[in-house]
Image (cartoon, rainbow, N blue to C red):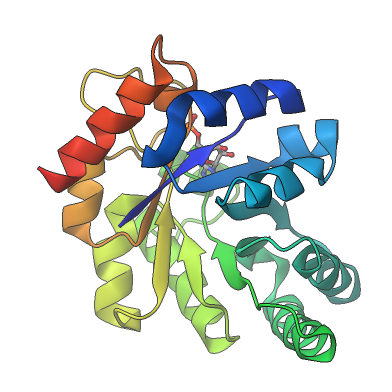
Length: 234
Ligand code: C5P
């Protein structure tokens, strides 16, 4: 299991300084909306020049034509993982897969993993009920979205680690799970709802965990990252 650190910063220099201070124990970094909208793609080039793997977490959710063109544009940045919302619809997901494959084979690009966001880890059943989705538990809803994502040819999904086991049991071990909402014991849950510890995420079968504030807001980010790696390997 890989640890992906979320670079949720509003300035590129803050992101670089965090990466430098964490050092070699983290190989994957997530560039999300806040950093990408504030700083543009320069952070991706910099992370690649530092030998890091990049998850470009822009969660595209639009009509099929717009989302699929955004996905093929994102492939040109050299990110290793990109994502779209599964709730954008089956036609959108299929067109994103096709456009990504075409773009990468046409230009000889390394094809990034294409991952679908299911239900955000900041949402739970109360949200589903509020939106009139009363027939599903949050786990059932995530599994439904993950099944559709697999049928459309996506490589995996973003979900809570609480759903990893059922996703793997139903959709196979090869179907990847990237799980945010990770909180080492003793850490503040903040705005996340469906949280899991790093060790439990490993035991549940997550392929990647996304850890933001427990590392980025720690007094000593390198020590926080190392302690998570130790917890996983211990
Ligand atoms: O700071 P924290 O560990 O809560 O950060 C989690 C990161 O994962 C954030 O960048 C957030 O945008 C992202 N994320 C999430 N839930 C999802 C998808 C992405 O928390 N379902």
